[in-house]
Length: 406
Image (cartoon, rainbow, N blue to C red; front, top):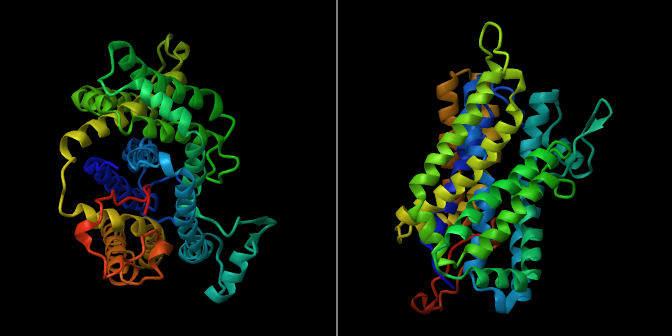
């Protein structure tokens, strides 16, 4: 298998951004979340939109890339078994142990629940959290939906390996020709535009797996494309060479999207020009949105290839820790925000403490408990501890990633 430091580093960075994003969800105005602070700001929507357009697409592409680098073709079904176990254990443990406190604090804050945790937990397990004839769907995976989606995507990819390998071989290792470069730039944008224009209006994003057709239509093709492009050296050289241009196009596209959004919320005073109502603003905004998504992904991969493909000393530790941090972080955010809100410390102090406390909690729980406890490691997606009798010098270097073989 191949070692790609830039992909490992991008994965760590992408998951780390979730702490900032989900912390901001407590404070952004007009967006639902499990718990909301009394300090809310509309301006937070703009940086969060800029991040939201590519954050999960990046993770799904990295997941596909890691499988493409792992050399799984000759051991597909053995890999399917180990991968299923490595994803299902953390998902089940998360739904039963890590996620319930989020729901507990949510129903206290939003619905005035006064029961104890001991009273709440059986209701959580039996779908008994009902109010005014409506019930919350529990047990739930909340932020762990990515794991629930990654498993069927992986199994589908393993079944389609012969076709995907054929596509990969057809692409070759040379840099894209003028025609193939145009196709690489345009076809993903056209696909994402079709999803936004024709599928998204009819199927809301639910993260419930079985009826989430918009998310599947966006995420699954990018996951498969990541596998196809993983070992194509020409593509990575091309992405690196174009990184300034793709970054520039991405900045223009997100500027258009956010500018139209701002004008929609703050229309100029006075009568509108006669031509304004005839411009397809919605379609322009959709085009800008999907262009930004794909150009941002290309720019991230290009800049990652240029700046991150080196053996950073922190990378092996962070690559292992990031999975347990991902599982823990949102529960810590919700709990900290719930405990801090009544103190009325002010927006900046409260938000800073939520972020800092989440980072500290993830670090302490991972370092002092999870990585040092053998039976806990698989429940947080970590490989089992190697035997002390094994010589680490003869072990093959492997990409320490959620998405590769143990």
